[in-house]
Image: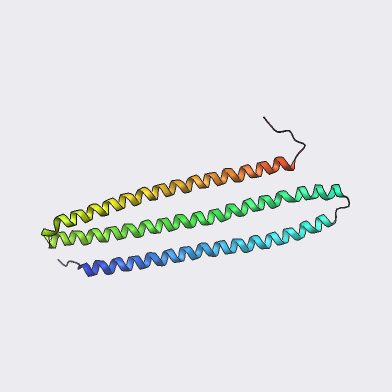
Length: 187
């Protein structure tokens, strides 16, 4: 039976860490690329929309017509801002989830490698049992702490997402109410 040396485990761990870093880097760059594309698209749309808005406002014949047109043209701008924020949030949330998944995967692989090294060390040097048991206990404790942190992080992200959606909806409804002053508010 061929056994692996600690150097072999270290090499495997290093290779896995490098692959994880590569995936993390590419994931981050993909998200940056998506955000840059969203920003460019939004800037182009805003410019075109502003040009249309200015053109429409310049065609108003009276001040009342100008004000009425101003009010009707403001809502689409606010809605576009809300849509932009939603898309940007979706991109960053997707990126955060991917980075968290990659980190969890990398940490899991690291923990397996360390456990393998500790198991091998326990077999080859029985006298080191208490030290290895302490190292395994510390590793288990670190894994437990990481899982709790990861779960808390996930829950915080879910709360933030729900808050964002509620806030965007409330902003849109509040603007609708302001844009239609003739309607009575429901009690």
